Image 1: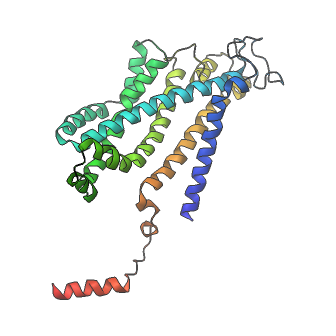
Image 2: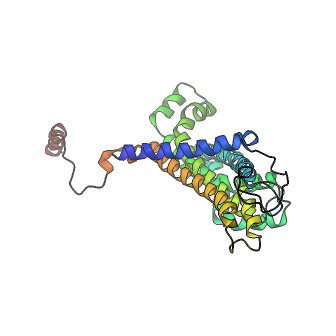
Image 3: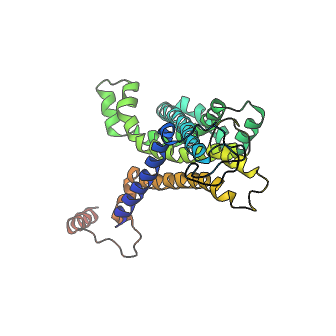
Length: 300
């Protein structure tokens, strides 16, 4: 029953992400107009403009589709880079102790600093742009992955298959690439999904605060410009201007949460074992195992 629920969560999460991913990729084909094309401002929803236009005359549906392209693209690039960097440094830190000790002190420094407030402070003084945003998220996104991967490597490097690989003359880099890297891939995937969620929310928050490039169409920028409209909440404008980008952000983050839970169950076999379900009744010991235990106790 538990496995069926996890599978349903996975399908729902993947379905939502696939929908938004295809919408972002096909935005130039799905959008009826260019996001910079101007019409009469504040037009009501119609067949020509399903969500109407904003205060300067941009079609809101086009902004929503092109905003998905930017928000998901910057989140993907920053998350892939940060996860890859953390994975590589975690492998090195876990395999070589002296190098790992130095890297972990650097990780401790990054983890001790408040992440999002520091990004906000840096964004306020640096030139806004996609590259600046990606650099912020990569800079502060790798330490968590590096620490988790290092912990896993510290336990894996003492196992028998690693010792056997050394005995037959395998080099350190061969052991890292062929034997230890596959053992931490599930852990890195879980961290990737969680980091993607954090980057998406952080990018939307920075854009909403006006600290991102104002010329770029994104979901956060849509919310920033919408909240600047003076009569937003005394009319029904918010329904077609605030609700769509807010719902998109909420749906994507919910899908990522569902997917991270499913990946965690897949990465940790103990979570899939029915023996670890909460139960007040003790497990019945097999008959053969009881005889072994009794014999050992008698001879000891």
